[in-house]
Image 1 (cartoon, rainbow, N blue to C red):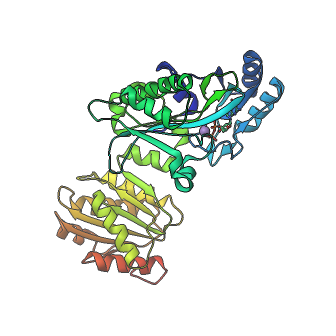
Image 2: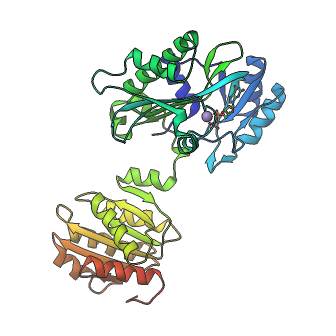
Image 3: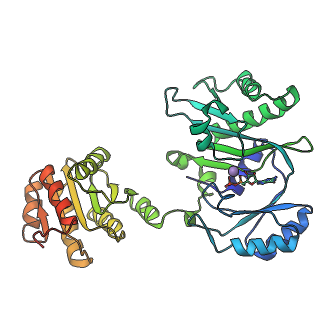
Length: 383
Ligand code: GDP
Ligand code: MN
């Protein structure tokens, strides 16, 4: 689960990460008042669930409180990279002498451990640095049981070329981030840039926090930070229905039980020259309603030209899937051909239920994939 910058800074500050003063504003008037209250120079920043706001016009440097209000008026109600701006952060603008990147994340590579990454190439896109100048990124790997040692954080500062004094401040931030990461079941904590101000203070100028979805059940305080307005409506709907759905770019909708089978289904579609419109896994033993919800999710995508239902029935009953298809055909507006491959529990019943409908039954998965690819390309069929 992603969070907003203002939420991340609130959580991180509790662990001792140093931030400048800031206020959240939901209207231009509030933003202007905040700028006046903060005094001095401020930045106005769109609060959206995406990075790269600076480049996308979401970070503004006003000269006066009035101008802060005007920038807020421009940002509020607009979108940045497709994300709606409902709040802005008005923050003390800090004259910066040096910018760093620091992030804590779970390395999915060989170490499979919590890793702290840092770089002197702060402020810019870290993915870009990783590609073009990987030697500019330094890492320490925390021990899964012992955690991160202070000496490791000091090593990191040393590798960045910090002085003893600077290193003390930097090490404190790394410690705070690590503690915050562990205590909140994060999958990512990032400060970019972490900057030395001209007056020598070390300050976090941006903050990003992602919480492990699977830990939200025991992190109610984090769950309370969820902003559904920033999420894809169709993915929110999928979550509510208990279905795993990921939108892709193709035109063949996939309804499948099980993640492995769903992946294999997408591969087969591609093998036969088609493009899947989505990944969808409704899990095991679904209700009729859950299967119908899956179909509805897929049909929201106007690109979908044909649907492939691929079921390997174990605890999932094929007749329940067939029932869902029958109901959907009667009640919903399904304007595209459907191919179904149903094997396993109650498959014979299911095939009978669908025999005289527009659903085209395939006897095996290759045939199903071939047929759905040709239907999506507009080549005839039973319909
Ligand atoms: P992002 O583009 O979404 O990562 O948004 P950031 O909050 O990181 O802002 C973009 C850039 O604006 C940063 O990389 C900084 O270079 C700059 N910036 C943000 N806040 C300040 C500030 O208080 N002082 C200065 N000098 N620059 C800032
Ligand atoms: Mn940033």
